[in-house]
Amino acid sequence: MEFEFRRLDYRTVEYDKAVEHYIMIASNKNKNYLLSMPNLYLYEKTRSSLQTSKRYATILTKFYKFISVLPRFKNINPGDYHTHITNKDLKRWQVHRQTDRVINNKLRPKSETIFNDACVVLYFFKWLHEREIATQFRIHLKTWIANFRSHHLLNYIQKRAKQTIDSSSIKVLDREARQKRAKTLISSQDISTLTESYPDPVFKCLFKLALATGMRPMELVDFPYMGTGKNRHILPYSEMDKTATTFTYNLVGKGNKHREIIIPAYALEMVNTEYTEKEYAKRAKLYRENYGKKCPLSILFLTDRGEPVTVERIANATNYAKQLAAAKDPSFKSSNIFYHTRKWWPTLMMIQHHGTEGILEKNAEVLDLAITEVIMNQLGHENFTTTYNHYLILGRQLILATKGFTNETIHEKNINVFNAIDEVYSRQATP
Image (cartoon, rainbow, N blue to C red; front, side, top):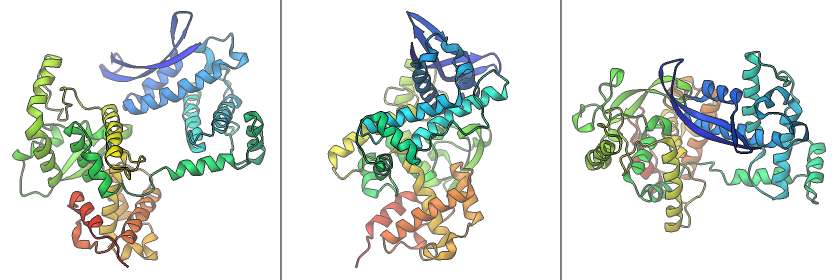
């Protein structure tokens, strides 16, 4: 039995609108089977975000592949797997993935990733349970969790791996994996190297817009050429009010949630100067040739082939640019990703609010709801404490690593992220 996932675009009868999400397919002896329950789940829970849909479909497909090789599932139709899967099966999957990692001495997937992936599967069974669909999985039990800190389980994995290894090997692998993750802000040098490595200038422009606003890739790609409704004031910068320093922008973010954010005028001017004036007209013409219609005013960012920029295209272009960046500069960090752009705006905001000296003081650790609410709204976060502590730490790291970074450099209502980044790294700490 083989399993795969595919992207699906269609018009749903339920809401009479176009939707797109991933679906799971099982194949055996030249026959394909749509897996009804997983696909209904993916439709209901992930159609608002194609990136989330792909992630969930990937995880569920991996889990179903594992289930299909278990002896008791040999004669069970994959469309009925959900009625036979138990808590222990989900735990076995986690142990299997950890064992495979130890055997091959891999850094990935980390224990944290294995646990989080298992949570996605758990959410699927929770969804089944809420709809009273028959299953042997019991949501209120914790037997689905594989505790990789358990000495007993570590020894079991060693035995399965058939290797003589230290009982802390999993923790060692996790530690090494964490060391490869970026714990600080992407540096000014790496920002410059990466942005200049994008062959298509639209991705350089998107990267800089993300730095200045903290928007997610899925939010950036929906930024319009000309806005409507609450965003009717969003136009090419050449036609906007030059006396304003910031503009509000209403967007639909992760989880289909609406929020209003602030976009600085300098960021819109950058978009207009580096992309709209130079690239948009010829790309819109290619769009018309490709699709047989005029490019909608709701679409601003197009590739050099006249195709709308998507989250997946941003990821692919960034991965390619990272390879070019590393070739140009051996010190370029491979851990840099496009998503790290979201860290600069809130970090600078945190420093501006507390001041360069105040952010280092003990009382800065007391949750400040005013600044936290501003940051959470801009980024679309939900956890006050986590958000505040994370950016407080990054702000402290930045101040401790540099000197001469004054409050006058940034202003809460109009932080010029581009200038601030240059200012931070142009004044390195001296003895």
